[in-house]
Length: 146
Image (tube, rainbow, N blue to C red; front, side):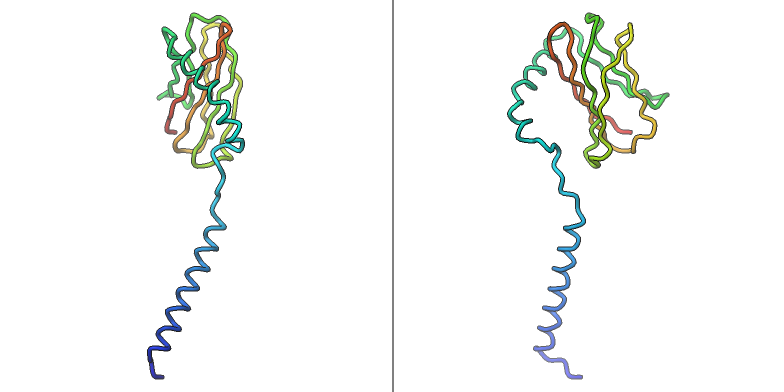
């Protein structure tokens, strides 16, 4: 079989088309989900979020979020100046949307909430806490590695 320039062009274009088909197939397998499904509404409500951040900065002692080194849990230490704390804790996994979950804030008399991290997938997690006390709303976010 004689190899000439026409055969070379045919082989090149065949490989090129096959690689394009492979790339299209791989791109359909990738999850293109957004960080938030309601991103437009989240953008409109940003001023409320900013007000929560300002309120948190004005506190003498802010919410502390600590990952326990001895136990598999996360501790939320709310300021002792507040008797009643309400709100929500959101565990956000940037690499897997299906792992995200929300919990209601349930503190005892000591204003400490312990959340078990048993069974959570390893990796980066963002803990977002929207909380309310004494008629004001607050926000705290931190990143931990499991």
